[in-house]
Each structure stands twice: as C-alpha cells, then as structure tokens.
Image 1 (cartoon, rainbow, N blue to C red):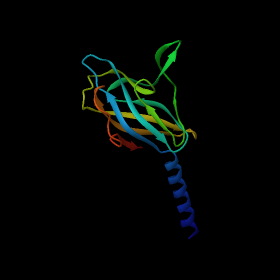
Image 2 (image 1 turned 135 degrees about the horizontal axis):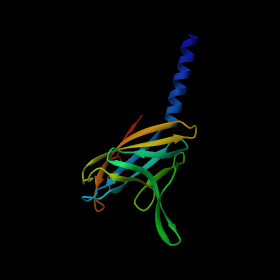
Image 3 (image 1 turned 120 degrees about the vertical axis):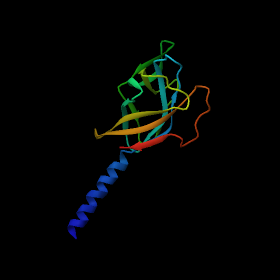
Image 4 (image 1 turned 90 degrees about the vertical axis):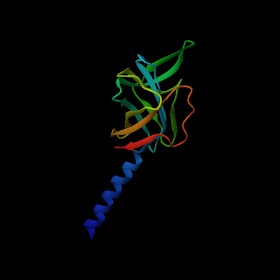
Amino acid sequence: MKRVVVSFAVLMSALFSQAQAQVTVKDAWVRATVAQQKATGAFMQLQSAQDAKLISAQSPVAGVVEVHEMAMDGGVMKMRAIPSLALPAGKAVDLKPGGYHVMLMDLKGQVKDGDTVPVTLVVEGKDGKRQNIEIKASARTAAAPAMKQGDGHMHKH
C-alpha cells in the first residue's frame, strides 16, 4: 500500500509540474504572401500558466525563423530579432502586426491565402525545461477578417 501511495504522489507531482508549464496558443495565423516574397509574419496570442519565455520557433516553410519585435527608435519604427519573449504567468501576450511576432524568412515558396502553415514554438520555463508547441496557423491576407476565438490549433509535446 505504501508503494502505491508513493507512486501516486510521484505521478501527481509529474502531472502538476506538466500542467504548470502549459502554454496555450489562440488565433494563430500567418500573413499570406505574393509570388517571390521571401518573408512573412506569424501572429497569435500566447498564455502561460507559469512564468516562461518564448525562445525560438521553426517552420518547414522557412529557412530562418526568428522572434521579432517592432519598436520606436529615434522616431523610426524598427524591427529586430530578440533572444526571447517573456510570458508572464497568467497574462496573455499578443503577437500581432506592428508588435511582437514570429518572422518567417527565406520562404521556400508562396504562402497562399487558406494554406495551413506548421510552426513549432520553443518555450522555456523558469526551471530551464523546454517545451515544443506544434501549431497549425491559417494563412490569410492582411485584409481578411480576424479569426474567431479558438480557431488556432495547439498541440503540446
């Protein structure tokens, strides 16, 4: 009986720590491109159950994927890669045009309106453990209406 109680406690501890690291993704989308365009952005809303940070991303549609920010610098809006993006516990972090976003560069082909673009986000918890989050972002033109809540897909690994 003691062994069962200890096993149950270990299992519950593992489940609790896994739940603590959970990051949810909502409304993931990628801006559709025109022929010969070599870069685009991916946008979404991230929320983490505990303090964490988005440290990188990958996608098979792009040769280079970086986490970027748009910020004013001397009166000029500039875009730059950042080493990580803080995900404070319980707070939604928006990745949107004109702000933080995932930049897909060296595109291997055109991203057409209606395409589904796979993106893997790499999130690191404050304990240093990393979590890969596989998403499928819908491609749409800039003029397309916003997606309804919950249209983004999320798979935790």
